[in-house]
Length: 141
Image 1 (cartoon, helix red, strand yellow):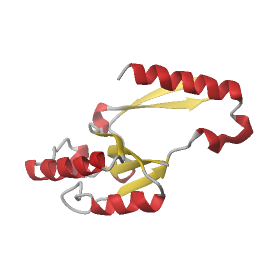
Image 2 (cartoon, one colour; image 1 turned 60 degrees about the vertical axis):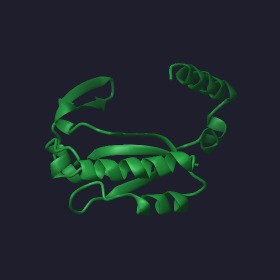
Image 3 (tube, helix red, strand yellow; image 1 turned 30 degrees about the vertical axis):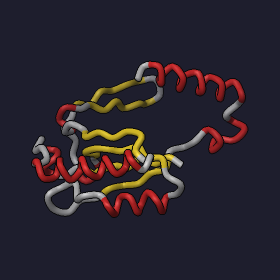
Image 4 (spheres, helix red, strand yellow; image 1 turned 135 degrees about the vertical axis):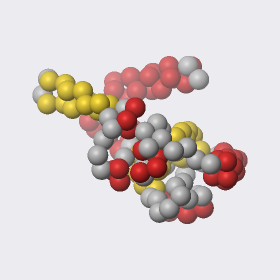
């Protein structure tokens, strides 16, 4: 099972305040544990929303909205992609994580859809296309 682990933003991360050396060291050790355990597939911090944009869809119309975005508690400051056996295992790993922010913080855990989750709607042709795309992506690493 794959899970996306989402580190929620706070006022400091949205202001562009970077983590200090202590937190970078702690996160580096934690990431090393994840890699050694075969859990971590990817992970990155994200720039503040002031450097981002959103694209709003309404039928065939597209509207670009430049950041920053309100509601800091709804924004993401970073992420991991993990391969674990269960949601419970993902929770246990998150509980071992250093606090990513100076004060209170929150990390969200969301399961990633797998091909078999889509049932008959995900036809053999669509599955083949997906496998081809994943193979192409892995060549670019």
